[in-house]
Every structure is written in C-alpha cells, then in structure tokens.
Amino acid sequence: TLKSKAAVVTGSTSGIGLAIARALAKEGASVVLNGFGSADDIENARAAIEREYGVKAIYSPADMSKPDEIAAMIRLAEETFGSVDILVNNAGIQFVSPIEDFPVEKWDQIIAINLSSAFHAIRAVVPGMKARGWGRIINTASAHSLVASPFKAAYVAAKHGIAGLTKTTALEVATHGITVNCISPGYVWTPLVEKQIPDTMKARGLSKEQVINDVLLEAQPTKQFVTVDQVAALALFLCSDAASQMTGANLSMDGGWTAK
Ligand code: NAD
Image 1 (cartoon, helix red, strand yellow):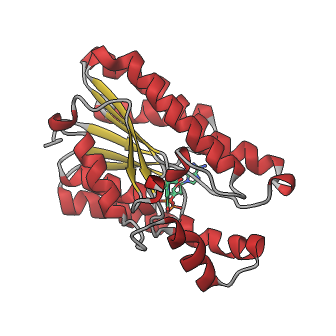
Image 2 (cartoon, rainbow, N blue to C red; image 1 turned 180 degrees about the vertical axis):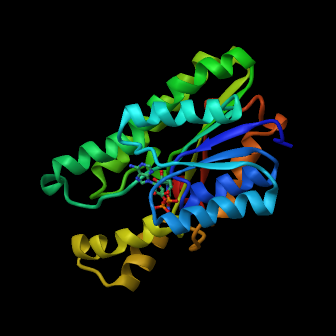
Image 3 (cartoon, rainbow, N blue to C red; image 1 turned 45 degrees about the vertical axis):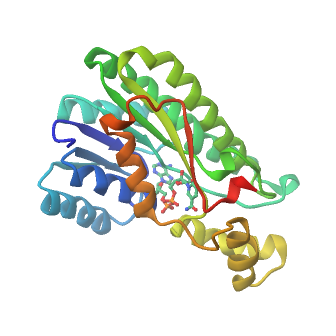
C-alpha cells in the first residue's frame, strides 16, 4: 500500500500520466495532478480520484517548460502533503518534421518539457527523499530513448537524454533508499499519438490508415498498441518493495519493438 505516500505526476491530465496518477491513488497515495486542459475536465479528473479512492488529490497548473513553476509545484506538494515520496516525470509533447525544417522554438520547447523538466523536478525532490530515506522517481521515456525514427529529432534526443538522466540520478541516490527508473513504452494509444498522425501523413505522404498500420504498428511486432493501464501497472510495481533493487533501469514495454 502507498497510504502514507504522496506522489507528483507531471502531465497527468491525460493519457499515461492520468492512468499512473489513478493507479497510485488506488493504492492509497495522495496525488498532485499537473498538465493542461479544460478546467472542467481537470476538476472532474481530480474529484473522481478523491471520490473513487478516498485520497487527497490537488492540481498544479505548472508549465513544465518553466523551471520556477516546476519548483513551485514541488513546494506546493511538500506544503500540502508534507513530502513528495514518488515523482513521475511524464509530461511530454511531440513534433514531427524533417530536421532541416524543424522549427527552432519547437526544438527548445521539446527539450524543455520532455527532458529539462525532469532535471528541475528531480533536483527539487531529492533533498526530501534523502532526508526520509525513501523515494521513487519514475521517468516516462520511450522506445525512442533506445532507437530512433526519422522526423522526430527533438523527441528522440530528449528521450535518449531522459535515459541518461535516469542512470546518473540512480547512481547518485542509490544508498538513500531512492530508486530511479524509466519506462519506455512503444506506441500507446493516447492523444499524443493521435495528434501526430496528420503531420506524419504529411511528412511521409501517407493516408491515416497507412500511418497507423505501416508506420506506427509496423514498429511493434505484436501489432497492438500498449494501453495506458499497462504502463501504469509497471509504474505501480516500481513503487513496491519488490522493486527496491531495481534502479537505473530502462524498462521497455513496446510490443517487441526494440528487440528488432
Ligand atoms: P498526452 O498528450 O495524453 O499527455 C501529455 C500530458 O502532458 C498532458 O497531461 C499534457 O497536458 C501534459 N503537458 C504537455 N505540455 C505540458 C507542459 N508544458 N507543462 C505541463 N504539462 C504538459 O500524451 P501521453 O501519450 O500520455 O504522453 C505522456 C508521456 O508518455 C510523454 O512523455 C510521452 O513522450 C510518453 N510516451 C508516449 C507514448 C505514446 O505512444 N503515447 C510512447 C512513449 C512515450
């Protein structure tokens, strides 16, 4: 049970992050939701967690591209719950373009949100975790932390960076009861994947069906999407005592993609 624990899950108003936040709450953790979206949708998700699981859930609108807002989010969590025991760095965006046309501001934004935000959040939570002698840091990486695809320069660079940050942090905190791991899903059916289909159609000159079957599921030998609940179940396992000797790992859940 995670009853005495508090978790911050970045990018948890949608997709994988929301599934992880709900899974942690189901085991009793208090949670901080974070991310963008309509105020009504976010409040509904927050209230549903409190109602269904009997835990406290709060929302932080912190923009993961802004270091001072990230620090404020961690402060809010520590003030509200007294600790951040579990940090899930999950917020992420995608942009698909040939590298020579890749907008410079998109590169900067993806590096900030998908990579640097994890650094800013980790450095804010580590002192408290060390003081308490327990912590779980989970980074949502990607199959793109291990292999590349064309037209995703910023995303692939950021995810490879997350894998390196995970290993480095794991080594630094290893004797403090803190584990640091990343989860590397293949294609998970979420708004992030749905939204990149039109750009991939354009970049590769394909129809929607061709993108789904010949580009996305082509990568996955199982020919199926991963589900958000499957990713959440792995995150939950990483928070358990059974996983206390797993650290610095990059855990694939990709239908066999990176075995090829
Ligand atoms: P999603 O679009 O459903 O969710 C992304 C979340 O991040 C949302 O809550 C969004 O509001 C939030 N977000 C975006 N920009 C933000 C910002 N500046 N500040 C704060 N929050 C911000 O996407 P998802 O598929 O659930 O993606 C979650 C993570 O999983 C990402 O890191 C993504 O790279 C990774 N991932 C996804 C897949 C996939 O196939 N869907 C595969 C591998 C890895």
